[in-house]
Image (cartoon, rainbow, N blue to C red; front, side, top):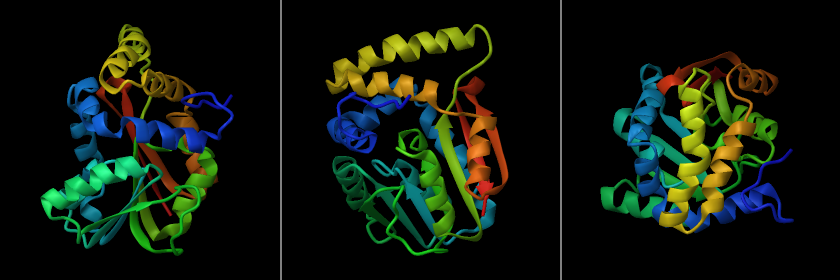
Length: 240
């Protein structure tokens, strides 16, 4: 069953674009509040897995408001970051951040589709996706596109929500994710569907070993994952 934000006749891709356009103005604030600020720590941990590879060209897919791209630029001695996202409004928030930080020359944000990248083969040392692969309309197509644009030996790092398994944390987290989070989202962003979709998309996503299988099917090798924060999310790594 395909999970979509609004359950209209539109494609998942179109609905996801609309959803992020709707919540772009409050997205960063809600991320900090709803994760209690832990999302910033998760991003830094994910970027640490790249640090010793000395990449020069990094592709950040589903870049959103460019939080991951900015942090990667800060932590790594990197030549250039290309961020791609389907949502125009999210990118506009990101571009304003780049202007304020004078990073326009280091980070380029482009509106585009992660499942149909208008990029050359073998053109990036590292590709990253932070909380975005759940939103791909066709997961396998998106992963194959990432594999195509990576250089030989290139690294893929994905940060994504997972489903906790330990009792009673699993039950407490599910209650928060399913009931309280959409309530807060409705109050702050006026779009409760977006945060209901977050819960439903996490439940439907093939996490842990099942996702490793998708990575391998897309052509990646040396695939692994590390669970964070009692299984709220995981860092996946793979290589071309």
